[in-house]
Length: 478
Image (spheres, rainbow, N blue to C red):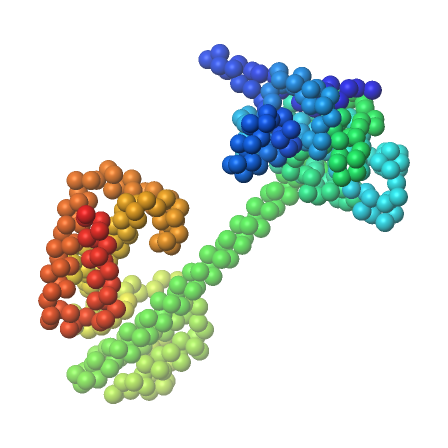
């Protein structure tokens, strides 16, 4: 039977240091997880307790350092775990995995009523014939059973295949108590030769076979062959494309109906304006034609287009007859529809009328309306968004001066920590600009809040907001 240390080396075979093209040496690391308190001197233990240091943590060993593990085993290591896969640096996360080494089927068989009275050795005899491959090792974990399949060095880019095979193992052996939680890429298991203190049992190797597997040897366990997977992948692409197409068509219909809804509002507004001016003819037939044309374009039926046109007709001082709406205002129902620009020209819309429209207006009037929404703030000739950023940076600067950490500032202001970091970086890089900005804010706020007529025109909330801003600005300036 193989020794405990040699078995660990077998799992991590291929983990020797390698050299890159610049002759730099790179290591693979194995994590050892245990309580390291007993390894400390009295002074180190006192210091760890004083600093409340958690001594149950990972330590990392290179392949060349594995022989040091024998000392742990000789000392009767308690509740000691080692990582199945290797890491490229001293950090244990999926992103830090360097290569994959083995599958571990962790059987908590004692949780199943049928097997609860079995020993790990007895359960192994029961399960052995049901395993799809000869295991590299079977290990008594002190209560449960590990079935281990070690394979040759395998790059981390095959993690998806690794996980897919693990899932197939789980589906096959879940009814025997295989633990789903023990399937992570960063999985650790009890080290052979250590002691399981829950049951006061040694972790021992029950069976060992010097197997020489490749990860791809386990691929036949998958539900589909590679060729079947490729067919499935193409079919899935087609289904996704079909869903995207339907969603795009739905969004297009929604946008068309949204446009038509605004067009109906414009038509009603135009009729009301021209009713006041007693402009009763010269546009009626064309306007109802456009309503019917755009209604069918938006996806409504011919009958519905007539109903929409009739709604507009009912608002006119000089209404058209129903048969005229049906026959004379009938569109061609072709794919082409009249453009907004042509509608504006044919309806002879004036500048005053266009300013009250939502969609029936030329670009210059649309830009005019948009510019009103982007009107500058009453202070500092900035937009509301620019003012908001300036106020936030002042508050961040003030809190940083008071000694708060970035995370604490973010929590206080209800913003992201990264935003705090970027704001402080901006302030540091624009010192000569930031100071005059705050000075200008203080000056203008002071003048505004001293102006009685200005205060009478704003709400109490606005006054309080400006007062708070002035307070923050003064503290930042100091």
